[in-house]
Length: 315
Image (cartoon, rainbow, N blue to C red; front, side, top):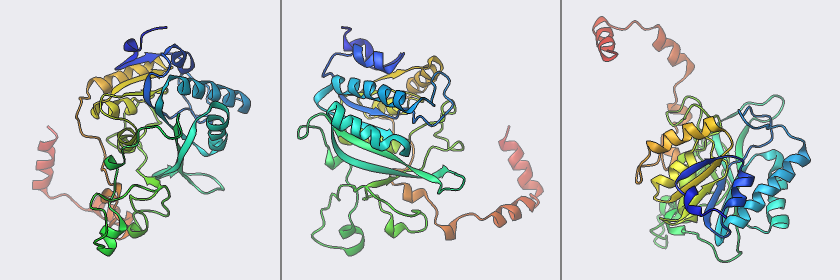
C-alpha cells in the first residue's frame, strides 16, 4: 500500500475508483465530490451518458472508496443533480454506511434554461458523516446574522449569529428580506462564463465561497481534504487558501495540467474569490441595468476628449 505522502498537495491523474483503493484506510479528514451527473455533459475523457444501472454501480464503487479512505470522524460532502440525487443518497446511507446529517440545496442565479419545464437553478449537496456522533463541525466558523439581530433588535440574540438553515426561496435580488444567508438553501451565483472567477477550461466549476463554507465547517487547519473529481481544481485551491493539506484525482490529463497551474498561482492565506454574502453584490430589480439603458448608452457619442483618454488607457 503506497504511503499517503505521495498523494498530498498533488493531483494524481487517473480513475478515482482505483486511486481511492490505493489510499491508506482511515486517512482522510474531508472529501468533497462533485461527480459527473450522467446527463450527457461533454467531458474530454469521460462518457457522461451511461446506462442507469452502470452509472449507479460505478457511483457505489467510488462512494464506498470514499467511506474506506475517510477517518472514523471524517466527513463526506456530495454535490449532485436532480436525476440521481435520491439514488445516490440511498446508496451512500443504506448500502455503503454513511449517516446523512443535512440535505442542503444550493440555489444559484444564471440557471440552465429548459424547454417546456421550469429552468433548473439548484444543485443538491449532501452532508454525510462516517460516524453518527463523532465528526468535525465548526459551527462558530460559519455563523450568519440572525433575524433577532437584523430585524428585531432582540437583546437575547447571540452576538455571534446563528447557524445557516437549508432552504431559500425566490430570487434574492427581488426579495432580500425573504432570502437570507441563514437559510438552508444556500445562495451562491453559479460560476458563469462571463465571471472573472471562471477558469475557462472546465465548464463545471464550483464557487469558492460555497466550498469555503464546507471546508471551514468540516475540517481544521492542517487536515487533509480530498476531491476525487478535481476538474477545474477549485476545491483544492480553497483548501490550500484555508491552510489545509489537499489532494485530488483527475481522469483527464489536460484538466489536471490546468488545475495544477491554478494551484501553483495560489498561496496559503489568499482570500477566497467572490463575496462572502452574495446578496451584497446582487442588485435588486429597481437598481438593475435595463435593456433600454444599454441601447441609449450605446447610441451616445463619446466626447472627443473622452475618446482620447479611452484610447490611451488601452495602450
